[in-house]
Amino acid sequence: MQSSRNKRQRRGLAAVEMALVLPVFLLLLMGIMDVSRLYWTQGVVRDAAFEGARTAILHEPTTLQVETAVVEKLAAGGVGREPAITVGAREPDQPVDVTVSVPFEFYVLGSIIPSLDGNKPVSATAVMTHER
Image (cartoon, rainbow, N blue to C red; front, side):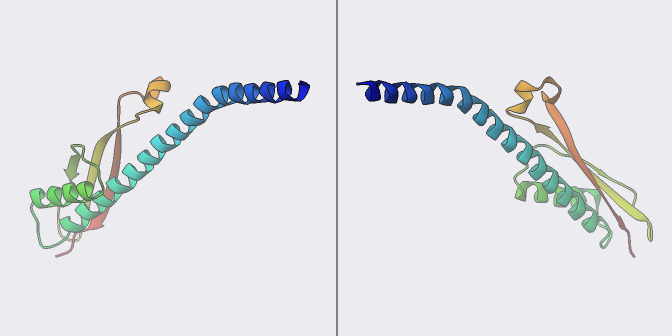
């Protein structure tokens, strides 16, 4: 009789422990996913800026062609937000800079940490030398 009561108490204690630990664990897991999305977005934006700079140094493309290359790279990476794209002056033997910025929203961490609430810009700049 004593053994059966002891088992029920231990099971009840395990249920209480699980009820206390599970929300913290899920919050930690979702926070890790939010930060992972941020790093992934940063990588895609960096690659898009590089692609834009690479396009800008070849055969005198228009600004629209550079922007199209950036938007295509962002779309291929799964970043569907409207980017802000800045293409610097393109003079022979001078560096050309392409800056790409997209808004990023933390889904879970934004509701917990007030400074992360709302859209935060994720941006990258790539610089290459314009050749003739």
